[in-house]
Image: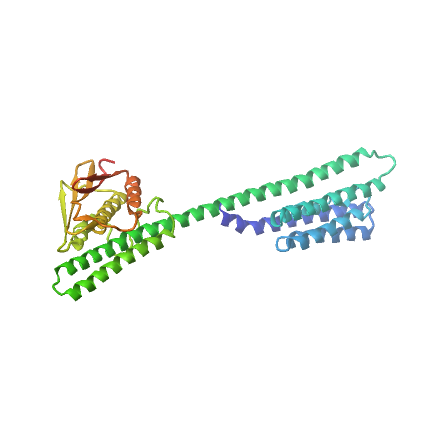
Length: 391
């Protein structure tokens, strides 16, 4: 049964329980009246029973008010003299421990201890009144047994309610932690996707501006374009600093995310590579072997590997730069390789980003492996990703 089903059946169950207890109380009071009880005693006990049912209803919204009504009703029942038995044994008296349960589940632990003390005091008062009315020929051990049973019921109800409450609180804490982890994962995913999309776009834009600055013959235009390129690099650094506030990029990637305008598809790779080319940046794309179907996570990892490799080459190397992007297919895997020639020199970029960490996590999650080789003639970023046939 689901939680919503339990909520929908709870009012019906509650009404049925109240009706059954009230009917049993009426039957018992009718029998006691038939045995010779005074009408005032019957009315007092009936009024107390009504108060118990009212308190059980009120306690759900106003715990202390309902509990106070129930305690008053029990006091009336205990102090009402009856023929040879205690009116606190009426079926409607079951409402009082139920009110104690409800109160314990709603108020603080210290407040619930006070409620328990009231219930214990009520049991003691009940037995003292019964002891004062005890006939001479009846053993007092009966009252001790009755008092012990009532103490056991009251203490057991309170302790059970406390344990159930703590279990619910632990469940709520676990749910809060789960939601917090989901939020952290979402923030890391946003950070990673922003880095992948915006950083690549800004890097390509700066590279093209630099190429235009080299090829123009006007010195003023060259200086202006150089300033724009420098501004773009500063913006890139600022973007990385801002994204760092969203948390670490080591959370498992969301394979189905499709941020920005960069399509997550192998078919987009030729256009992605072509958009990064400029007079000073020779970026080429080749594909060898028969293309095989990939899982969505592997396809995302392949595209992002190419994107990150090209971005890093354009950002970290002084032009002219040659970058070769290659896909090599076998039945079992695809090897995605981004190789650069080292450029004219390394460019000072002000620190390392976390893009490669995100790519490594994407590749690992897709079941592949990522390697970065630093050779004499440049860097090679290589990702091996399983095909669906080789998975």
